[in-house]
Length: 233
Length: 233
DNA sequence: GGAATAGTGTCTGTGAGACAGTATAGG
DNA sequence: CCTATACTGTCTCACAGACACTATTCC
Image (cartoon, rainbow over all chains, first blue to last red):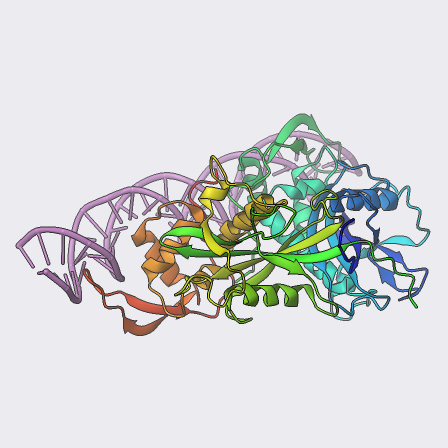
């Protein structure tokens, strides 16, 4: 036998971000049980026996959104283990961050009746809706990670469908950063960045204006040179 | 009572980095008990009841190095919870990353007889010494985090003593990145970066060559503009 | 003086930001 | 024609990299 003393319950929580209607939104569930019954919370759950943390996160993502593993970007964010964060006892939660394209139907395949996309600004802005547990802090950390990742990596495309236009990609950046960007300079930058996006050959049909070229992701994971946020002075 | 099922043992592991003799080194302990008895491992231990993860990491750091909380930079790195990573059972470990200046005496105040600074290159290079558990991977992640943090933050100074010269700061960058840097361009960059370092007014006494100005850290935490690694193409 | 290290100036290419101007669609 | 969106070209300023040069110490 092992002398190992189990001293905690380990869970995963998900910060699932998407851009819908030029807004950065996060997937929340309404809690059906105490504690924080009726309050919005990040989706999550206990890690099963013999299950890796990343596997548990992918399973939760699939249960909540119907998105198969590999269909979205999923990375570990951070771990939260303050003694009082869950009134039921010592719960240590590893948060994962996911980027999803705008889904055709909201939260398809979800088991939770009360799952919903919520605008991030309403949760972190001036008069924020309070979330359960320390989930507001987890969300804040996730959003900051997303903002920073867009600068140095090609992950913005993870918010887009497989084929997208430069303008769609730009609106991802604008929604996540909350800043307008110059469309012309943006176009020049992303098309000249090495292996960031590559043209598909086709164009969109628009209701007005010149049709746009369609692109898919190139092979690059790092963005060189980086695409820095305007302010950060 | 709570229906909470404790399903894991939660621990913290430390990746304590320093620069000694122009080498990036990490603090290791030799394991005195099974599993992996006699193998080098990262220092760490179980999180106590009612103890925060960060507090546990600071406590471990102090036990191993004698460095008081606040005397070093300490940040959360990542959490490792693969089912088989510890043969004794389900152990979830949150790794913390610490940056220390070169200590006058190696590992002062340590309780472990077998604690030692080890060159990182010997652990991650061509024919690496294998560490216990998944500690080689944790170390790899920590070193990569350190390399990237030096680009965008002013944390390189955390490897220096309170007063330091520009050349000492440059040797930190060179040791962590493993690349030589142009001393003149480096000097111009760090002295012109906003609030990165500020002159103390005094100079060093040297055995040969012009005395160097002494600096201390400025208030800035982010480095604007960033100081990018030479290669990363 | 010579050797060693610290620090400055200068040039050149690249890229960011600003923005004029052109291209291609619908009405 | 006008409007809307996509895309290209051009200008200017700032900074990175390369490296000549000056400054201040010990010998």
